[in-house]
Length: 144
Image 1 (tube, rainbow, N blue to C red):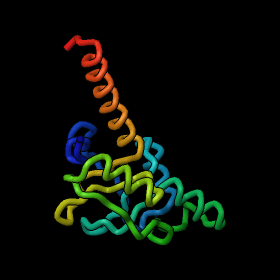
Image 2 (tube, helix red, strand yellow):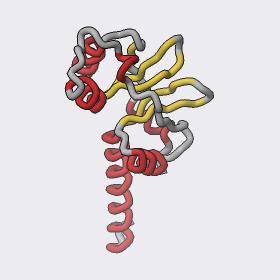
Image 3 (tube, one colour):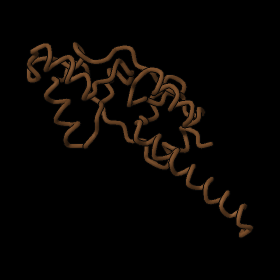
């Protein structure tokens, strides 16, 4: 079973973040430019929250806030669920499903190591299942 560390190693550990004082508009510009669905909110090297497309839809648009004036820190999700790099992708999928989240920071020893998305996890699970199916087909047909 693939660990989160192995997944990060394969996909890369690039972290995109903003400070809490950045505007929602600035966060959206970064998300659009990088083609990502969420940004970590960091202050002095510490994770203080996460801001996602879902936050924008539910907390900016529906509450009639100005994206050019409202700071990310005001509307970010403050309770951030995270995972450590030694957990498996199945552990991560279980947490994402239970908590209904799509972006999970990877944190080891209080340091952000990267971020894993639901797409990353699903892609890896499918890849592992394809390998298992191939091995089973070979076993059944006797063509090792």
